[in-house]
Image (cartoon, rainbow, N blue to C red; front, side, top):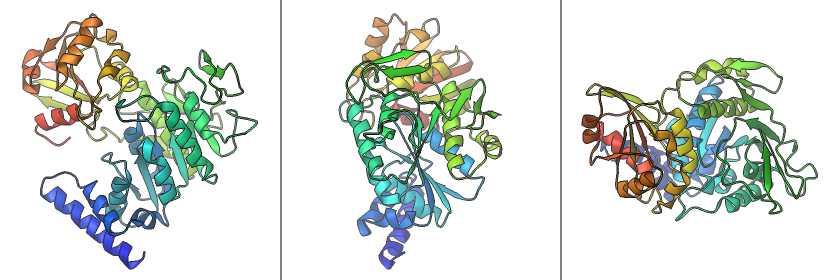
Amino acid sequence: MPLRAKVASSVSRTAAALSRAAGRGDGSVIGGWIGLKIDPDLLAHLSAGRAIALVSGTNGKTTTTRLTSAAVGVLGRVATNSFGANMPSGHTSALAKAGSTPYAVLEVDEHYLAQVLEATEPHVVALLNLSRDQLDRAKEVAMMAQLWRAALVRHTDVRVVANADDPLVVWAATPPGDPARGINPPHVTWFSAGQRWHDDSWVCPECGSTIQRSGEQWWCTGCPLRRPEPHWVVEDEGVLDPTGAWHKVSLQLPGKVNLGNAATALAVAAEFGVRPVDAVSRLGIVTSVAGRYAQVDKDGRNIRLLLAKNPASWLEAFDMADEAPTLLSINARDPDGLDTSWLYDVDFAPLRGRQVLITGDRAYDLAVRLDVNDVPFQHVRTFDDALRSVPPGRLEVIANYTAFQDIRGELDRVI
């Protein structure tokens, strides 16, 4: 690297270490931020010489990145932003901290994908899904698909692993003007993990006509856009690869959605030459991801933490949660988005019949929504109050971003 980049990288590592030592955080942002101030091209310098995978989408980025890192690890050391700092400062900090590694797997905020593509020149990009998120500040989903598509058009040499079940992702991954639009572009590998959330993709992003669905299939009623034939498919408790071979996937992470994340990880790893048979066993070593899915025993309760930040992820969280007392926590701070109207896009009916507790800065917003949904609940002011209100045994905790972090802090331990 140029001398300036070497100095910036060294300062980045030092700043991150000081942040951790001072208890001000894990240093995954501040180190990269300072490094980029010294050398604005530091991310590009740190990326040079590495085979890189980028993972982006509205939901599942952090988990899929962690699983992909485990799978690619078959080949050698992998640099990754494991704490979920998914903007350029986080990527810079992660690569500087890792030192020289042949591979990197980076989670990328969907808004920053174009910028990170330009800086890192990755080998492969994984596109997971697009749904509404943080309505007061995030772009509308069709606009995000347009940004993705424009970015990929400028990088036609990049391999793409994309979700065949999401019309917005299929359109974004397919070159404009392709006569086989949505069928089989040569640079795209399609995966299918099933997608239960459809409420953001009923309108075709190409022509504005209605999207029709029948079983797993979907198609536009006004143009050739349709579900492509997937190369990787979740089937039963495993994954079918492009050769038709089925691989049993045993995860310590709950829910079918994580089986889909595992299929994506196998597909991305295959782009680096990793055989599925070699990678599947490594997926089972992942037990929690930045605290998500972690289980903690406290005061006779087994507490499991689930992060849910938008309607699509709440739907999946209800699928993961056991029939047990459940604490819901909602904040509306800047990282969460200030608008809580999205609560009315979530069907809380699956919680009927179990003990439901609510807390958080916007607990009263949640209370109104649950009342409309005919879900009885009890308001508690603190996490300790919640523990005292439920019997010994399992307590499911579902919270949005800052509420999740608050509860991790109240547990008084690092997860």
